[in-house]
Image 1 (cartoon, rainbow, N blue to C red):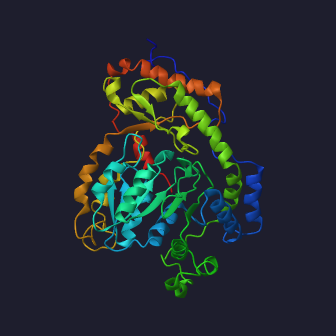
Image 2: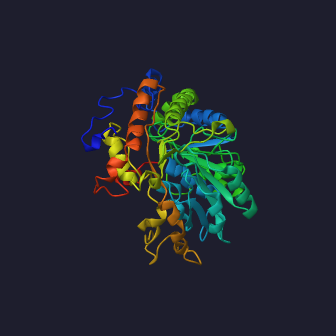
Image 3: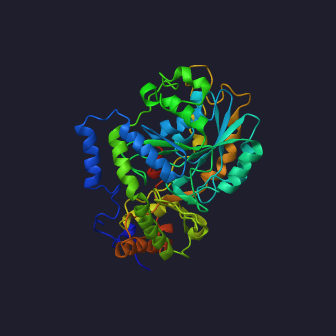
Length: 442
C-alpha cells in the first residue's frame, strides 16, 4: 500500500501546472477588440452586439439571437417570451443554479422540481409526476455540459402541450445525437460569464426560431433604440417598444460583445482539445471502483462541448462507505486542490422556495397564485440529494504528461481508500464545494 498524503505520505503533485487550467484563452485579438470599444466609447452602443448576435445565431443554427447583460436576464426574458404568467407552473431539475428557475416568481408562477439521474441530468422518468393542469413549461438544464435526453423530454412536452426552455449555460456548443443543444425547445438561453466554457466577461444570450418568442424577448429587456427595428410582427407589442416591458434593462456591455465575437471564432477548436483531454483522463481511470465519469458516448453524435466544470460521480458503497467529502479531502492533499464535492445545492430544500415573500403578500411567493401547495411535492426530490459528485480537473489543453499526474492522484486515493476508513474526519458529507456552487454567477 502507498501511504496517502493526507495521512503523512508524499503528495503526487507538488508543483503548479502552468497554463493547463487557465481560461479563457485570450490573445491580442481579444485585447484589441475590447480596446476598440474603450477608445471609441461604445460601451452602451448596439452595433458590435448586433454583429455578435448575427454570428452567434448562424453558429447556433437558429433564426434569432438576442444578447443580454447576463444569463439570468436571458432566462428571465425567455420566461416572458413563452407567456409564463400568474398561476402557471414551470418544471425544473432540483439540482441546478438558482438562475434557471427562481425568477418564475416574478411572473406569479411556481417552480416545480423533478429529480436528476446518476449523470446529474434531468430525469425524464420523473417529469410526468410533476405535471398538473397548470403546467406551462419545462426548463431543461444541460447540467455540467451533459446533454439531457431530449428525445424523451420533447416527447413528454408534445404529449402534454408544454413549452420547453433550454438552459444551455453549461453546454454552449454541445451536441445531442448530432443536433446542437439549445435548438430543441421553443427557446434557449445561456450565460457567457467569465467562468463558463464560452467565456466573454459578463454576458448572456437567448436563441430561438420562433418570431413571436424573439420579439417578446426583445421587448422584455430592451427598449426603443435597441428594439424598434425588431418588433415588427407581434401587434400587441408595437405600442410599447419605447419601454422595456420587464422594467429592467438587459442591454449588453459591448466590451463583452467584442470579446465574444473573437472567442466564437476559436471556440469549437478549443472545445475539441478540451474533450480530447477530458476523455483521455477518464479513459485512464476506467474500471476503478467508487468513481465514474459524467460524460456521454461521443459515438452517438453527442458531446459535452467545453466540458464546463468537469465532474465525476461517486458511489460510496464501492469504497467501504467512504464519504465523498473525505474522498475529496484526500484528493486535495495529493495535489489537486480544486476537488470539492456537491455541485449546486438542491433547490427544493432552499428557504427561498419555502417561505420567501417577494411582494409582501403574507404568504410565500412560490405558491401565492397557485390553487395547491407545490411545496408538498418537494420531498419526492429526496433521491437527488443522494447522488454525489465532485470536481475533477478541467483540462484546457491535451498535455499527456500532466494529465497522467492527475490520473495518478485519483488512482492512488481509490486504490488506498481503506487507509481513510481507519482515520475518521470531522469533514461534513456536503463540504464547502457544494455551498460554493450556490454562488456561481449566470
